[in-house]
Image: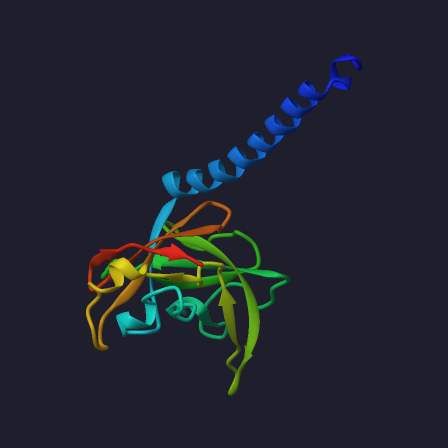
Length: 185
């Protein structure tokens, strides 16, 4: 057996094979999340479609990027991550229902999205956290940005796939119900 790996060709084949397996597992995990998980529609804080146009645009902020621990049921203390339990509203968008330190669900027919939090302050008994989900660095590519509506007052959302571990993957933008392509920085 040691003679087999003393030759350069079998070593090269073994190393390349291992790299291919690692690459396929990374790609496969993302594709598995995109194909089999819950689809949620998260509304952005901005109402100006030009704010999401092109790679030079600022990272997006979702309505669920700021959560108030004092107004949502669930846990009050978190270690490193926070799980935001989302429920679908009548208009098809998803809003926070509860906050958890683990993947525990309080309600049926919900989705859990995991994020890292930063204490954002509070007053009068309110505690607010800014939550980063890892899906903020997205934009509409330049070729599609020309067809975005102009002006403010639009409903802008991102369609996101969420797996059972709370990991999320952005799929596309939705502006006033119309889909637009999405790219990540």
